[in-house]
Length: 166
Image 1 (cartoon, helix red, strand yellow):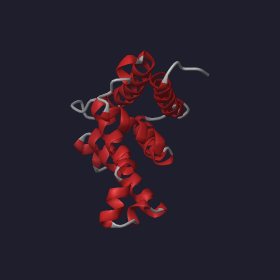
Image 2 (tube, rainbow, N blue to C red):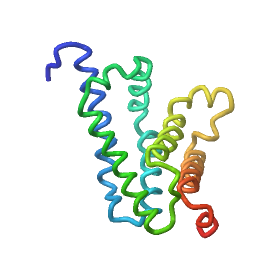
Image 3 (cartoon, rainbow, N blue to C red):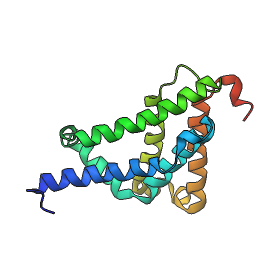
Image 4 (tube, rainbow, N blue to C red):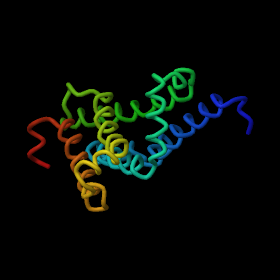
């Protein structure tokens, strides 16, 4: 492939990185799952994906340094990420219809929380490990962090009276 210049290549790499994560979400077939299980699977997938693909986190960090300049030029990235929110909208709708989920937590907010914790786990691994040690980044530590993140996100989505029933 020839992309014209370094910026063109960078843009295609960024698009492919987002295409890959969204394709992985698509394979989860969340629409066929009960809302609680769908939200859990999506959160687990995101944590695991980001952990296995630190280069995805790095390229997003670079894009943030550049104030999302290249991302703003890509219709594809906008479309791909709109699909991620649409998935969460469907999960939330089903959760509300089942009287499980709160009305005052938006799909975008849930996406933010899932992304933030999954992203930080990778982006700050080196500094966090240097300061506090490596226990959180071995297999057991990562399993615990993933479980805690899912509990926080699901706890946020659930109505207060439904949290005790879990």
